[in-house]
Length: 297
Image 1: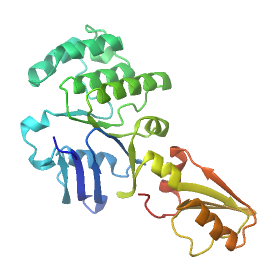
Image 2 (image 1 turned 120 degrees about the horizontal axis):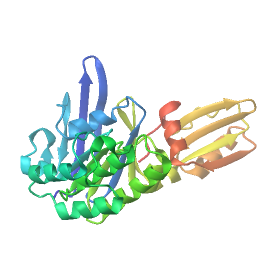
Image 3 (image 1 turned 120 degrees about the vertical axis):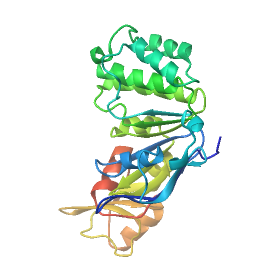
Image 4 (image 1 turned 90 degrees about the vertical axis):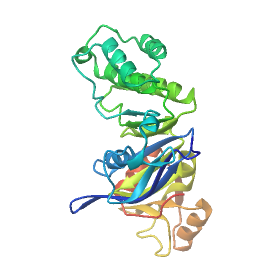
């Protein structure tokens, strides 16, 4: 298996006159968990569809397991587990019927292991899919995808719409099943608390452009919020991600060394500077809502 099983190289995709992705370049190393984030319409699902070979890029390329995604051999495609948003399962089939269908469709399907997971999850084998709760359907889709022992797992917001308890259970099972065999995971999610718990690295797309590609820890340590008693910040201050002005206070979210940023603000006339570390959700909001700044690395 390639040491970098997922790779995008300057991938661009247009829908007519609308550019959904622009020069997307990123790599996901083997055995890592990468979260691709962005607001609705930012290009996340388009990126996954290009990666899976469902859509042809306008230019650039996506690679899976060392192959161009558009030319992925059938045998290699069987090493990929994919769960789409909404868990698109055949509604009239029973849980066991779906297991049997998958076993006939994929030579490497591990029926015994799948049944062990379903038993642990409490999924009734004789119940029809349309009678399962949304959380049960999500868990079933994940168990079916992982029962082929895939090398790469791609999840497109699979926990969307689940309540907090079911989502936590789903995440815990997802992490255990993926990490027990060192699989590589690329997933999208709108729930930033979940991402912060499970991801090694995150990418943030804004209007089809990758603004951030960083480890979670590096991102949280290098991007800080500064509150000071200024009307405006110094023009030469680089790395500004977001700016908010309030009566008697300026708030800046900045990429850079804390001591250097604080020194620049004080040299500009600030008499008080408060520095705040941000949760991933606050960082995401600043990167996707306010004034553009530099990319964190």
